[in-house]
Image (cartoon, rainbow, N blue to C red):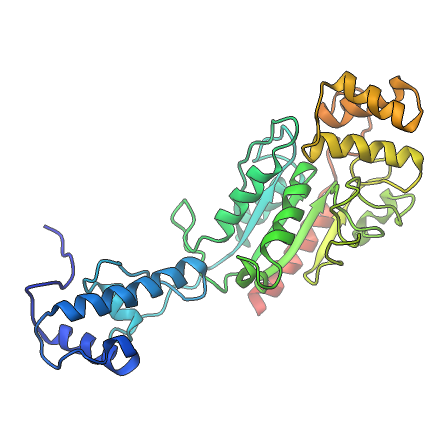
Length: 352
């Protein structure tokens, strides 16, 4: 039978030491006696202490090891009370979380390929994100929740440790850019649930980002861009618009090509039409079938139905893009610039 820790009916010096630490450090332990015998009062005090410690570990404000929460004395409780000297292992690599786009394979694409190459070089662990990326309207929240779950964990699903203080990167493409933006603005800002992870975020590499701030373009992507002053297709939720955060403090680079409908948008009438379609499809405001949607938007903007319908189907399925090459959004990117940038950011994290 496996060892289950110290508990009721037991006695010994470990129990006396735990009582001593609880008496010394916490008001709820002040009345504990000085004997080596287990008491009901010790169970009560330990349960309270363990509940607080466990909650802090889950939140990420305290380092593991975790503790049991049933009032028994386990190894983790002794470590947390300072009775056993122990230092958590330092991960030998940073983590690179990647979020690919609508209908994408989570293991393939510009950011997934980048992270896989860096993992093979021994610079990071690649953690791709699985989410409901086939839904229309887009199910962005499924990705936001999963990214929050992974980034908020101190041990990932594969058993690798991810304690507070571990450097990490984020890579996004297309719909993944919406997921990444929503996650960044809902979880990493001061006072938000995962703000304790923000200081360890060493970089964000965003390809084809619908939430791109006006004027944001990676230096190596400048030759691919005609007008760097444009912005992403999202009309309401992108960096720098009223009610949204300004440019992030963390190193954030946007990689895109001129003519990308998701990333290269302006403020004229044609751009407003594209943004209206995007808002319906990508942000969950699709209230009718595509033909009805196109008709209503065409009526609002007093333009031809066929013009709007083409945009609708381009955003919904990518068929309009994939029919013609080269395609600025869907065709493969040259990832060399982003790969080198990520290497440099990961090198900074190691040096720190």
